[in-house]
Image (cartoon, rainbow, N blue to C red; front, side, top):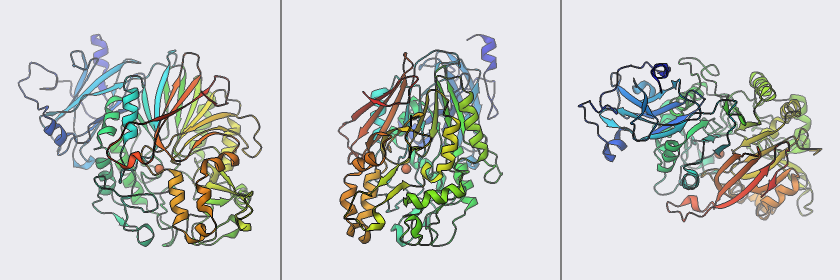
Length: 588
Ligand SMILES: [Fe+2]
């Protein structure tokens, strides 16, 4: 690091000082710094984090409990863990107006380099974080990253992060988080199971009413901020942030279940439309304050001009990621939650059943083709198509909150079911199945792109499947998709079982025993599916190796394991390969 390079270093998101920080790696300073664990936990309860690496920058984040405007928050970046080779230091500030969070973006860093960083605030040194810049676009280097989603905290533990850290502490480049980083509710009985020692509190909160038991949902800025504070207090999540740069997008629960634009769906239209712009803006602000994301946030601007989170990530010669926003711009679910609508299999009013979940395919397809609702919005769709088509990276990877692959449930072969159930259903029209015309358009426009992959979360299951322009025709696949289960959230099979068991009508039909065959039914209904494990938690790792092939590893945990603070360390690993030039998935 020569002097010219040193001078190029500057933090661009906050004012910085060129003066070396007293006590921050400066041995000449007399100011004593506490590294007492009790002080560190008090001042930096959420630890530190980094994210959105490029070949010359990476965002660094922390939160300094109690820091007020005027308090100088120092930071240092070094080439070694002992901070003997400091390449940048400076100062930032924070206050209650940004919930005491600090985000800086040093630029002028070297490509494909491991850095260590730390902060100093209120006389206390933060834990030391490790991060890595991206290789330059032409650099021919192997790539390995993890992808994860859905980390419900309520009654659940983050052993999946521990599984990742214990196996891959030293060989991951970065972590992609596909959303549901926090859940906005503290006891939604549709999927949350409060347990001792893992509860959250909301300072304000909206009572969900009878349908969801005694649960409450975040509604104010104070609520959303408190979610991040509580979730980020988890030791294993903090450890993952400490070791790897993250690339975050949101899914629905960073705002509200099955949300679209600035609308939530907590009451399934029992109280009319749930448009809540101020709530959406609060959720956006808390996300921006707390995620180490290199995105623009416009303070005071209204939704949807307050923030834009869809963005790219280039990592050397072999990977370009396109992280999309599946929530902010999407049209409402095509079938309203309110009235009964037999044409799409909606047998009860004010329910997600028949609207977003378990929707009759024939009725829905006809209606969708006319309405052609957009999931991405026109601008993002163009950005995505242009970006993927124009990319010269070996692998083009779409990072989506929700699954692209069709997920049908074909009950036509079950003669004991009543006639209206002996048909083909979409499992969830909240996924891309609800926006199938746009999916067809998008995939058709990308069908000549070589080496296209998608990764997704949201559905709480491990799936490996091939993507088709027309899933019903099943010609040659044009891409492969890997769906990661939740870090901790209730698996899709468990949620479905609970839904059927709690409904006398569905139970009486004998659907309860069908749920037990979830994966078999799923695979027979979806010939493009190559692997299904619908009752699991965990995390996934993708590697682009020297042969330019892709290997994906599913680290699968038993769903019972995440309900207990103790964990025996058991992980069931499934591995897959996609060779360069192919879209076929092979189990290896
Ligand atoms: Fe989720």
